[in-house]
Length: 68
Image 1 (cartoon, rainbow, N blue to C red):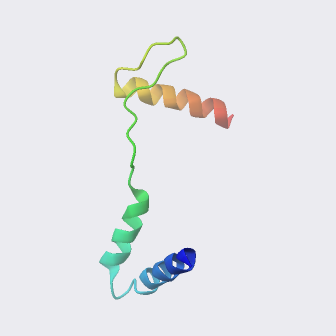
Image 2 (image 1 turned 135 degrees about the vertical axis):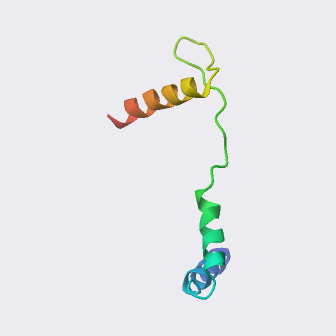
Image 3 (image 1 turned 30 degrees about the horizontal axis):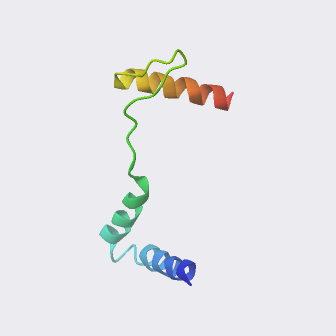
């Protein structure tokens, strides 16, 4: 019943896009926002990252290993 209600709500929002575009964009923004912030990661050598650039580099290395 909950899933059916969510589906009906989603269909009402999507169906009413022309008349209520703000409601549609508010609904879509709920899915696009980042809810968690990565502040520090542990590197291979055991050190913890201290800058955003180091965090970005470590995440890039990790994703590159997984996706190749």
